[in-house]
Image (cartoon, rainbow, N blue to C red):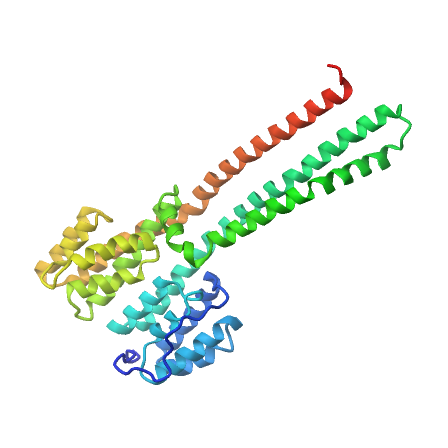
Length: 366
């Protein structure tokens, strides 16, 4: 096993300002931490590992890896270096690395991050496809409306000319004129969607997104299960290092990906004292079954808390795996139903516009 990273020295080159970069993707983090886990398991020096990976990662990760290598070389923590790059490394990634550095399970921490990033990537990819369909539906609607209005204008022009105008030319001109008329509206809709999505996915909206996720059907259940699986895994690993229950709880909650759940755990952790039992704190969170606290309490009585926490983690992880396996299918069904409702409403509105306009064009006095 490689030697845990030392945390006592303060590197002279340590920065105190966050670095804004291109946003990191779950897929990139999966590949990065998979390789870091392999390096650390083989016993290769972390400085060499970080420097080697700069040539095998996307360019926007290069500076963070070089900086982390310099910090670690001076005796600092990798998690502190990565924390200055919030657009690349989410808070739960930083928390998991920090727990591994503190309790001496850094290789396992890297592999845990890689595993969860892979699962998150698969789910987000499906959600991205749905988002594209939604945007396409909204943006195409004004174009279809342009075809309808252009066709109606062409029919009226033919009727006024007694049918003597060329069909294709008249129709093309009418639709083109309608497109030009509706182009500003289409651009405004597209700009509003793009701006709204950019704002919604910004760092400032991260807390709101996480709260919203917890209220979303299917996805919310998966997020809760994932949070508890990460939390119990971190507690299991940290407890083997001999930390107090309070420190174990406070350090483990930093690996929770959902910030809304993380804040709930922070409130409970701040209320703990050095004399409080871990089982009592787990019960008070009300985020996991009551029986899990009983399992940990048995471990406290028998003097084998790590084994008890491992049993709790296996149960939590099994729940997460089940939720994750069905999340893509169920969420797709839920979102496609919403998309179907939207398409039905828009199609009904366009059909009404067509038949109403056709009626008034053919029978203007009706």
